Image 1 (spheres, rainbow, N blue to C red):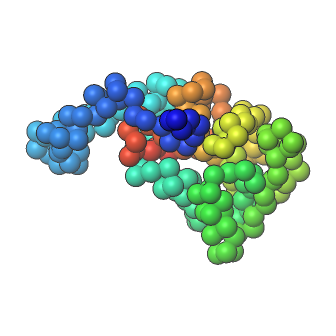
Image 2 (image 1 turned 90 degrees about the vertical axis):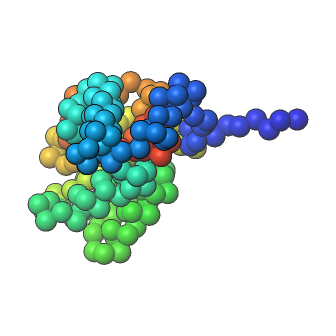
Length: 210
């Protein structure tokens, strides 16, 4: 009997149309997009086209998108970039207890180097309550990070409500949306003060949108 695979939220087969779109860039079109020769210029154009596609999907500006090597890097960039920025006064971070391991490890690292960390538990239905986040907010809270869709349970989190709550307190909000983008409609114009990590069509490329 063939095993039934139920972990598509974490990792799924590459769609044939995506493989077809990526194939030229994995073979003959291999130029460095930062080079000024013709192959590099073509690669740079492809990167900009990808940004346009993502920005159209998420209702944000292309310049808001930062490509990274993977979701781990994108989430680390968001959490560590904010909490260790000299431009951010607060050093208090709030995450949910059901975040992906890569987010929780980044949060524990930040706690180890001197940041204050609050971990908000989910309710019995697997969702993180905005009121629990509100209770954890402090005057020095710099960032709240709650994933959009849990990668193990599939529970959809109330990220709009949490984002609006944070914006009302002038706190930045980050969501790991690797399991959400492409499956749920996400409009960043409707999510104030939000950084978002997502997985794009290529299995090796992730992005941080800020």
